[in-house]
Length: 497
Image (cartoon, rainbow, N blue to C red; front, side, top):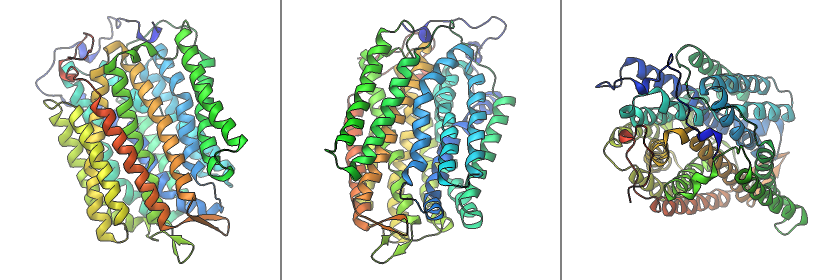
């Protein structure tokens, strides 16, 4: 068994809040900690929103046809370093590691803001990717910092914070891009990261759980990260070189082989990156598959709407809607409010409602939303009305995912499970995003060094999103009944049936 799952009793001088007598309500102190964890966690969502909305401005400024890497390089780095970050958190504490990766994220944001060419911009975005695993650590910290009866509520609160990002983020993006261009976006991310660092330093207590420091399966991590990168690059080049091209096949098959070798090396390693044996339990592998696929679908396809709305309208060249970022934010108000309301309502309902239900319903609604928007995405009214369907789906999904992970594993497996789910979701998000760009490129025109997209491209990408959401729904149906989060203390989490 991995050392990351070896029980390690907390020091007597630093008991976890979970060990204290549960209170009737969450309490001001616990609420403050939850809010402090919400900020750095949802900064990932803010970065995705700001970065996605800045793509058009970046592509036009640097005249690049490779705008996809503006998003992908950040996601790839996050995926590669996630297993190592989770392991180090077991050794040195989750708060300490969250502080370290936040500092690196800040360095990356500043580098990107100062970039004088596209290559330097990608370097900065890559460094900022070190911030990526913070969500896994934040959710894992909840298990140690909150009383058992409040674990589900705290996780739901942190997850539903995406609604505040969805409501305020577009307006921030609109104001910054319309006033200061994409560099304003990069500086805004740097400022938000700095605030997250301050909250971690002043509000969040250290999590006391530690495991014995052992060797790390560095080879396995390199195989995993390299395999994911090769697979993503091969998918991107497949549309350009051809799917039967020797180079394309080399990257695709090499990437798959590297990931499989990682699995073999980690299972046999004395000190694996992840305790993959937990995946032999149906309660774990089904939750990992469903939550990762559904989340990756809604986040990985987000670039479709951003490119559709913000790219210019050029007859015969581009079928973008040519909106300003501020206008985009205004028509997104109803959806943002719905994400907030549904996310909060789902978090409260999960005290009594089986978390599988909102996840499955969210996947079904996401598929419906894609299909509806495929037909009607040309006017403000259409975007506002049909965007509400996707908003309801997103609110349900983000609130139910962390609770399902808590219910599927034991307390000592929490950090490992969050890291593993984050890694799988990261790989799938990166691959799905790259596939979206490949689909879009099939119906596009390169004009003055920039790639522009036709209406058929957006329709095909939306159909692809609907298919993925339906696959996620099928995966959610496979999840067995789990022990409710509020009933979990220190006993193993197992399927009830």
